[in-house]
Length: 338
Image 1 (cartoon, rainbow, N blue to C red):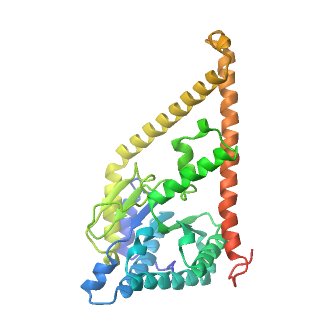
Image 2: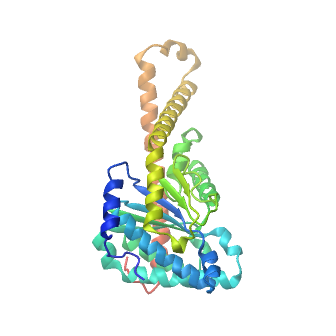
Image 3: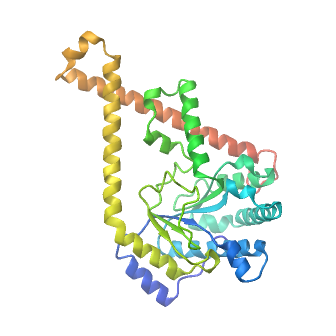
């Protein structure tokens, strides 16, 4: 089955979509696609077939999201913890990934038509080499598309993502690109795998489990969390509509919380800049600066310098990650030439 389906909604679905669009719509939806194995057991089929049915449901769900003008979707495809499953099941999941990413590369015209950018978030070095190459080709082939975004979390856990971000910041300080005072929650967020995406507005988990399973823990602090009892392969358009309605009910409170958080971050950064300027000022001058324009000018100057350091560091980090992908593609037999 194709990753991006062309079918339109039926009349009743279009009617429902029109009603939903009167209210605030989520721009970014994340899915924990849980229940494939239980679905396979329920239907007396092999686990691998259950996972395959789960992929088909993902393709259908992406079509619904396109029709609802939801332009960014993030899915939890494979956790680092999943490597602890039986070797047979892990091998089956790797083979399914191999098939689906190969199919994705064959659908480049369709991806270009809808301008869908593919991003795979996770520790790719844990994956078989050929799958790493396929993923790198898919990401590089679609890197210029900017209307729709599909983020696939593969070999991912949120703890690993946060640890990796902290390590990158520490390396930035060690290399002289950053000062210790430059480190902040905002900067950590910009070092995550998902740094190019806004935080999800809505997170949906199927199968009735009420937990996040180490998925987007940092990014979903102000997201609407919806837990639904349906198994993922049985997910329907109406389940998605129900989740969106729940998001709309909670929208005012979510927006208020986001605004308060952003204001707190800005004030926190202003306080840090002010403290750094005072620490760099000679003790005898600190009192003379009080209540003068000189103090404000020094703070603004320090802020500009900090922002420049952070910007240069983030550019280095982005180049490092892109180089990792291009190095994977070189020497392979790619669909894409870079």
